[in-house]
Amino acid sequence: MLLISRIHPHRLIAMTFGALFWAACFTLQAQAGDIKPFVGDYVGSANVVDDDGTETPRDMSVSIHETKEGFNVSWKTTTYKPDGRVKEQSFSIDFKQSDRSDVYSAAMKRNVFGHEVPLDPMQGEPFVWGRIEGQTLTVFSLFIDEKGGYELQQFDRTLAEGGMNLSFSRFRNGVKSRSVETFLEKK
Image (cartoon, one colour):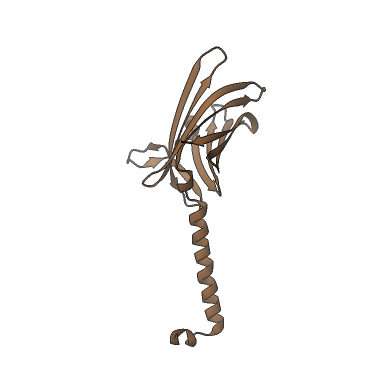
């Protein structure tokens, strides 16, 4: 108490305000980018709507879990074609914290030194990143085609009671070409 009485009142107020400000910043950053609420396995199905209005039934699942250096998002889709064919696709991406708060870079391959690096969109590989905003985990994938055009895919996974709402959109050169919205139940 003796030490505080020697500090000028204005300086004490400034120090207190500064300490409260930094404590609030660290608390908000920890809450905003926390992957823990998203961790789990989710399943569901939906009709994917193409730009021509046709719908294709699809089963979907996603698994989100923490890793040593960040988190992993793995998802699988099973598409049922009108001619009876069934097409399955699986994807798995590890994410690490970037230098930006709540923005995560994807480390999808290893370079010659064994370090994980993003894929190269100029080689036809996707550039992938993610972000957490409140209750939504978004994963973006950018593809550059041979003629310099692009495709951007956006997966918004928003927490909801009993699971998450999935909203997917694909844009080709700025025009929406496919979308789907559905609820994925937490297993």
